[in-house]
Length: 454
Image 1 (cartoon, helix red, strand yellow):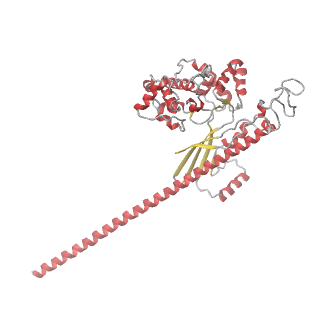
Image 2: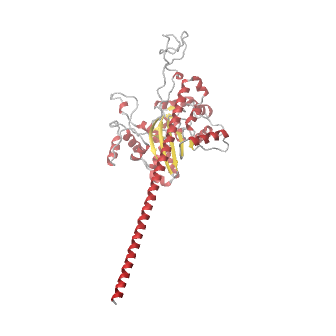
Image 3: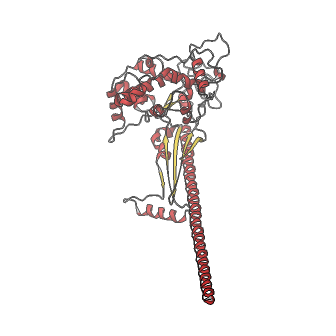
């Protein structure tokens, strides 16, 4: 009996040992599985990081390519400006092709591509070190009004309290519908356009109408102006006190400087996503004061000439963008031919007076872009990386008389000639200091003013 009990105990101990071995094996398998899983996750993370880095490099390569194209455009533009004969042979739209045509890598081959072009692309693909894909586009955004023109710059304010330049820096708006006819300032234009767009959306969207039926435009624009104007520049403005109290209640310290990014608008009291979205295609915070008739929007056209009806505006775009015969407006004179001579929407005097109002506010008219938006998207495997860069192409001051000329004389004329007259005739002539053909605009190196990562 005792021997049987001992054998039973021994058998029971063998079973425990087996269970311990099985448990150890299960634990080791679980540890191995966890280790294998973590290894795969780490390898996947490393692969994703490498892919993301490669996509970033591709996007940066696209941005560098875009900047190179803008430098080529600058060189070509300056060369044409310095060569009077080339101006008549090289149209502006031909120069713009240096930057406006999108670039895609790998280079797509169309069905009708020639054999030589295919061979060139194949050779390039074999020799290049690039891996992955990228797309680059350059857009001209020179047609937007600069909101920073709202700000009051103390360096430009005459400290003499007796000085009166005929203008005031008060924030008070003229809320009448006809105010835009005589006041083309940025704050009045902003009010006119914002109200117009809000009213249009209120008619179509009942919930929007409920939210913005009592929108205080005066408060919104004053808050914006107070935020960006120099400290102490609005002491004489009767509306500035309320704006200052608003910022103290939030609390938020005004920047007291120009806006450097459109995202700063979201922090200003009274402004939100819906309202900013309404004006984002018409206004920007980047340095541009040019109105390009080839890029002008219907809303900006309404600011330019408020007397135009919706039908007039629609007819203008149908005429300009006719697919069979598109028109390219190189200057204010080309726009004038349509408005005054062809459609007779304004007379000559009213048109010139209207354009003069904008020019006195610092705006210019032309088709030479100076502000660009570059979108560069890099793709590698499943990773994407997008860079959005805003680039300004500064212009220097127009050149004045050529070397060797004296003020008041024509090139090759005699000293002492009556200013503005041809030598020996007494008739009006060409003064190099004022002749527009002698004033050559030159572009400087393009520079990036903001980069956004998407």
